[in-house]
Image (cartoon, rainbow, N blue to C red; front, side):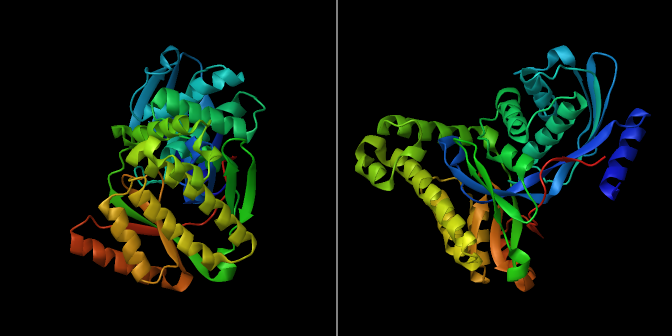
Length: 382
């Protein structure tokens, strides 16, 4: 067993005075490009990172789930209280997948769960999906259910939408479940067709650095749901099932009917889908540096057309570009969180120093950074 596995098993034993039946983990994710396209049946290109949620789990007698979290403390959830609107707070991310997996033939049962995560909450790196996917794969395997990873991801998404109350698309959970080391995941969110695209960062002397701006990340304030509703209204105006089905010419031709805001929201989705396809073509051609301008164009579209950035994100992107990044953009749903920048691997520290100095001038909170290593998806560790 590796250090993470041993630590989780030991912490489980300390919390529950017994040994776990197993230890599982699922990664957070960084979205290279393809933002706010997943709930529009569009294209996304995320990858798993080497920060993840880890759960040690054991079945137990009784009618409750006991949860011990290194970050959050203790919680107990009764089995008959699991469901939409019945569990609140952080425990909903644990209880939700248990509820969702009933539809996949996994009955509720008493469980003891210890959880630990180094995916920073509110950073735009899908800490919630990492936890949901770690719990989902653990519960499914403990229940002896043969459920493929895509169905587990859909169950985890259903948990977040219906139990947690966050109207998210499927990208985060699919990335956490299906990610592969040294690859990005090209996902068609309509068909759920997935393809692993090589990310040759090391051989190219490049790195993807994530800078957590520490700006509060508030999807549940309603902003995310507003953007989703605006996209669905635009699709109705355009007479299509989803914005994935229209061209930029279609959107521009219907600008008056869409209204000024609706036109900009739809324009972002259509142009973002096109950028995802172009980035994939460049990666297949091994032209890694050339994706930088598309990353930056994505950020500008998210800032101007979709209006989901905040000053900290904009300043971080601008400073990273000034410092020599090939491209930079916000990653995640926006309204706070992190940016991702493609940089020369030997100059990542210099880029961060420039961002930190820019934050100091703006009296922003001190940011943090790490190099994002494309990593394996959800798996059993022991």
